Length: 173
Image 1 (cartoon, rainbow, N blue to C red):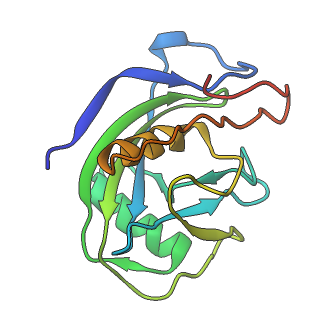
Image 2 (cartoon, rainbow, N blue to C red):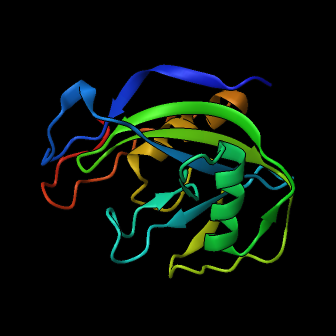
């Protein structure tokens, strides 16, 4: 399967403390969509002290200088979750304009890993099916839920958008 890149940028609404508009440099982030044989996928909560603490997302992290998406994903999942992945299939790329940063999310499907999940950054985890039962979900995770719904021919809607804790407005709308 070849990786698909979205031409649009998802905008997470909220206060915009930064400048630069379309000229801002995107931060590249490797994201793992860990999937079990029964189709369940892993979501983790953002730990206290991080932007959007308590929001649910797919695990991953920023690429370091000179690092590939695959290498960054392997490093981040070991650091955050204590697992070693057997490989990652590049899947989709999506740009998300958050109030604090413009990020380019490189989503990879992961079906092979070793080790027991350990939440090394104080986060929580849960295995989910559609529709997800944990909330709020980070805006950057919503497209993944829609893609999974399309792949699975799931007829429900992915409509619940989280509230911005500062303004009370819906994010990603």
